[in-house]
Length: 78
Picture (cartoon, helix red, strand yellow):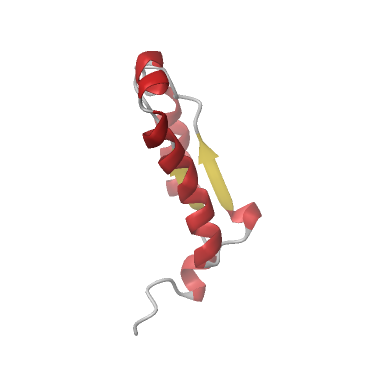
């Protein structure tokens, strides 16, 4: 079996962008939100160290994409 996550990947940050556009979606789509947060556990299972996982969820329940800029900065510049 080919290992898709290599040691090189694990040196990089695992960035999780958790988002629902409206407060109504947050309230109605709890399973979706839970699944998005569960991706953190998946990253841990794949070998990322806890301190190398960044969860960006400041936009949860907001239609604006304010944290999108934080995600782009984190991925591109760090």
